[in-house]
Image (cartoon, rainbow, N blue to C red; front, side, top):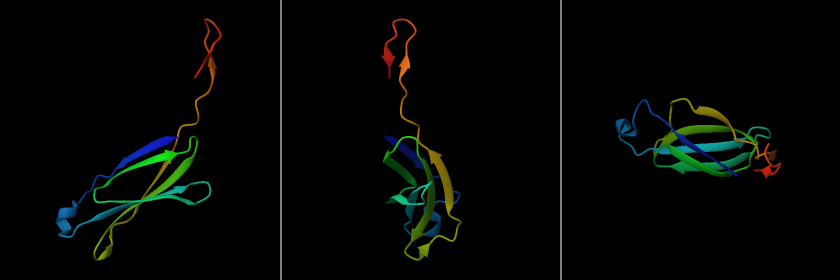
Length: 98
């Protein structure tokens, strides 16, 4: 399984609005468009665990507060997890290496 860590850098800090911000991250399977993970956080950082190897994801990040969704455009990212490790033969003694 793979893990993604995402940290958003904000042009305008949450303190500038005067309202507490909630940060959202939706992770979709890029092949099927199915929602895989929906996270919220009080900081613009997200750790997404247990993602299958060799998969492609589309992620949507946005901010909300007590007045609703941010007027700023949503941010969309794509990511791929690494494929499973392949077996390789070492040159010296022909053992399988993982």
